[in-house]
Amino acid sequence: MPLAFPRLYVIMDAALTGLPAARLAETLASAGAELIQYRDKKARSRELYETCRELALQLQGSSARLIVNDRADVAALVEAGGVHVGQDDLPADAARAIVGPERWVGCSTHTLDQVRQADSSPVDYIAFGPIFPTTTKQPLDPTVGIDGLRRARALTQKPLVAIGGITLVRVEEVWRAGADSVAVARDVVGAADPAARVREFSARAAEVFGNPL
Image 1 (tube, one colour):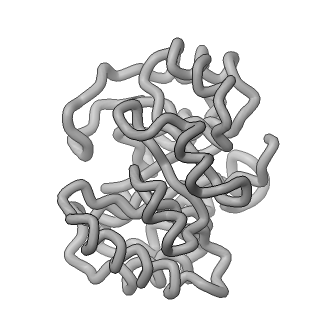
Image 2: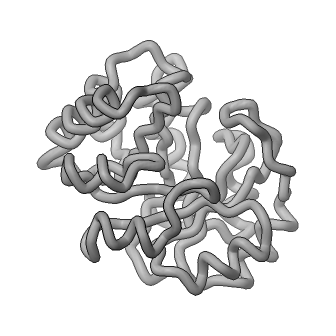
Image 3: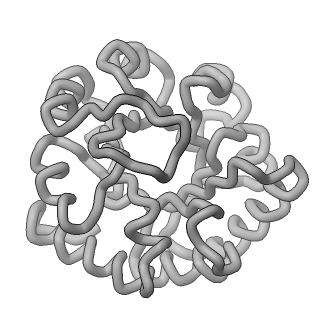
């Protein structure tokens, strides 16, 4: 992999947890999560900025990198570790121009053509899915499945993040199909004990790859 990319990519979706964002981020980081995306589709710009600033401060000094969903401007302003954009957000080159060369830029893809386009764009990693059915994100894109993930893997050498309906029960088959990392929302932040779930993913990664997250 071009990057030392964490095996688990936690999506901290505000709609899935009742815990304060900074408290949850600290819990995840202390359990070993090294990549945490904050997503709040309903937040106004000021609210999103203030929450992300608090998160960035909370995670300073930890090994966790904060990724801001959608908003490259907010990511740059709070000095987050990067931004993740979708197909309807700023194009990757525009996001890169805003956050600069040191922060990560990732993008979501849902078809093999989009993976090819992303591979030639200035992104650091590519998310692909949904692998399995999911209700976390609306509107739903067609499920690509494990076979689709294998085809996507053949199209890029950039870190490939599988997303969509991934749980601890199914994560091994996703990693073995070629995903460098798995993006997980509900199965981590919606768990009764998010820290314990992160550690379970870490243990499973060690079984598959010979090392933890």
